[in-house]
Image 1 (cartoon, rainbow, N blue to C red):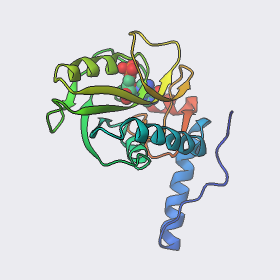
Image 2 (image 1 turned 45 degrees about the horizontal axis):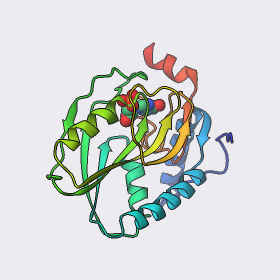
Image 3 (image 1 turned 180 degrees about the horizontal axis):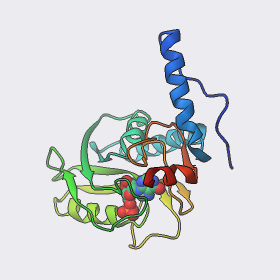
Image 4 (image 1 turned 30 degrees about the horizontal axis):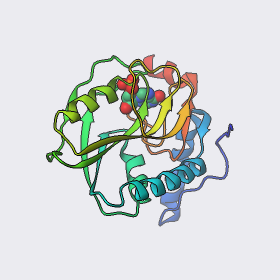
Length: 210
Ligand code: IMP
């Protein structure tokens, strides 16, 4: 289903003045979006479903969510509040595309976990799987630390571009192989706070290089 932005979205803020400042800025931000691929409603609905599934699957295990920064922070926050179980959190940061829209295939750990995962039930939370190189590297790396279990919950996966075989137990959306922003995903560090996932207008890339 295709949905176009530009109407019906509001932001509630404490004062009239700040409302106008914030809303016009967000409008300019949203005007950079060409097409909405996954709506806020679709996202929240799917997260509720997966949250239920995780609540059942981990009912008798101590769950440790490991988020891959920065992209997964929005998804992880929403997902974790839909899992009706106590859990702990840790984060890793790896190198991403930076201002580019193509993966380099080289993965660097920028921030490691704060705690050991030996004997823990780890659920790795990823924003998007494109070539799969990042995830493949992370899984190999985390397995060497001998967790009791290690599964993946990926918000999105691009179809037909995976370069390595991966076992992704929980995957919320499959999308075509296009560059997307929103719901944690950025282009040059922008657009992460959009509550939906969409593609950018071509002018946005042109403006960035000129
Ligand atoms: P992979 O190693 O090619 O699978 O790339 C995974 C990482 O690249 C993700 O965790 C994102 O940070 C980034 N990435 C991949 N595709 C996109 C996209 O369409 N928009 C923004 N970031 C992306």
